[in-house]
Length: 554
Image 1: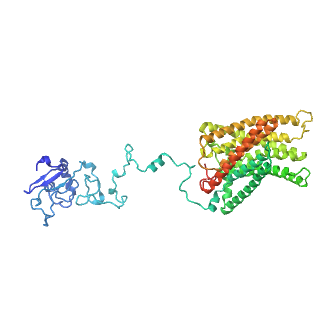
Image 2: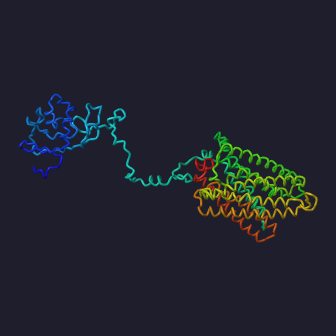
Image 3: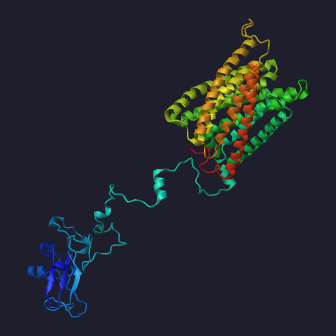
């Protein structure tokens, strides 16, 4: 055959018995090196070994091109000259690159050393690669090559066709998002995640009942509507208490976990705030429903005074011991400050609000201690709030708004200045007209009422600023899922409206009072809106579900 048409690395045999062998220069140079691992011709001389290297069955640089399966003689179809009877028989003879003697790889499990050529790895006696599938590479290091453990080059990574995985790699899972494939869970098991934060429902509902009771422009049936909210709040409070008892009895150890958890424990405050709204609601819808000379009124008024002192004692203990525990056992980053950190101090602050509501109907002998204690409680709560406001504003300046799922809780910041403003005016109005502390006619009740009004105006504007900041934050990025913190859009704003009503009454300004009426309608609509989403969240398992409530870190 013309050499121009002969492929490189191929051997051809013609019918004249003349072999045309095209060999690489590498094969000629390596023949002498292969003499020491020829198992079948070890007794032949070096020239015979060099001439017959392609007739041996153990060569790693190529295959034997001289074979003919049509013959069955002892020489495997070859005559004495090594020629075959098949015409134009050709096979490919791959050749490996030249490897210096000092780099020859030893395969100890397969006899003598072999030079690594075309096939990377061990080969059998016929020159074919050994099948090592299923064999333990750690038992025989010959199966592990350097190429097999090389990492994929970073400069040419393989593109993935799994779009979802690529998207997940770029966008990590948001813990605030609900898993669309979460399994259904029975209500009994979900009770384990019935947290103290549920008392924000009764806290907000009780605040609505108190707000309705002090509306400036009344109409027939207004007190009835407020009384309905008061009764519904009592039913809610009893129902929540039953669910909490079921949780603690059905799942032992959850009570201790709930009061020591770094997040859920903060919501012990709404439980006591709910008690405060029940006390104020009882004053408005029960005590004031009796005439002054009614025989039942006396012991009810006394009961309200007892309830006030018990409430002050319990909430003061909560403020002291809960913060002490949090200081000792938990670490809160200031860059993650949330207004919910104010909740342990909130109940003691509402001691002043309770005093402002019940003090006017108490006898003078009991009224003055209640006002003094209420003023002290209000001062403690508001001072602590001012200190935490510094961290709150610093957090907003440094890292921005909280996650959109928790921005509704920013309305908690409206509470301290609002409740302090209404407490100042309420306690000042509860002072007897003849009150003169120094008996010198200087610090009388009228002067104190004027100072209370001035202070309330000062604080009312601060509360409005916090309200606008929270409102803009929520509208900027509205939450996607319901959280019990949404009730913060009701209760602190109820206090803001009550403070507005008290200021309007003190200034005798009808415009302010009508504005307060409009704000009352708005907060009633908000209460209905949040209640609907609360019920819906329970049905669709957005809350009361593992990882979706306040019993997990956030």
